[in-house]
Image (cartoon, rainbow, N blue to C red; front, side, top):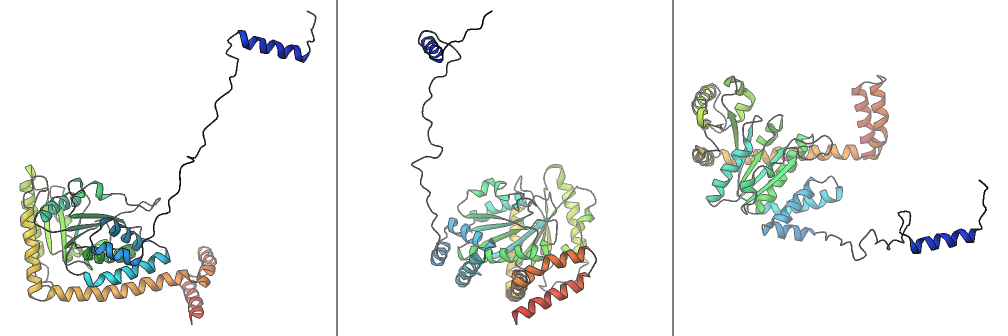
Length: 375
């Protein structure tokens, strides 16, 4: 077939004529103008930064939002935030100290959150204001709390007399424990007269929490194998009160047997400095049995230790302990922020990894460099 060469204007005329008289899927209609990606009416509102006066006034007025923001300020690693947080704590100190601080620990599965939820509802019904500070294990990736106890205590999380604050352990027991103690000061200044501190229950956080509470409560379960596995000398020596949880249904008899085992074990320990012999209770957060007895045991312990002077002596000892802990933490932070140390540290790390220098010599030389720059 012979090839025809049509002029370009003839082709354009044909296409225009075809568009006017025929509907074809090949036609491309002109589209509408696309809207802007960002809303043209949107304006970024800069968040108001609270002053120290506003923080303190809000905390003393029991403003939960400002209290939460102040605790976030305490937990921040920003040096500017640290300075302001210390000012807030210092001004709240005269309004603190008028609460009962209770540490609650137990093995995973003992029902710590469920127990706190049940007792918390009972305590607030008696006219108290409750703050729950839960030290959660942290995600290695995000650094946030894994358990998120606030979502697990549904019945009291909406109670206006309850404040729940999960704090990630972030792999540092000492640092978080210090921040937890500072958080206690703010919660007391905000009017909370009962403070529950729930530990992870799987590490050394129990020792840190024990050094900041008036009463240390150990939760145990029965029917999970050898009852004596729960009787560990270290944790039992710290306990002022033991509660066997989940004592309901078919587990009631097992809970009573476990209670007997714990009572016998506690009798073997020497009398603690408080002169209080720890008591053992059974309870169930499901059918609400035994909870009133447990709380009466708490009140009995507090009355006993206040009468013999141990309560006040313990508070004084804890204040002294945390003074030294704060000094140690500040020195450690100052050391790692020192420019000479920051510059030399990677090189020393590499030398230690390559066995070109021992860990002790590396530490000594880094400390020498630090002190030479601070003199």
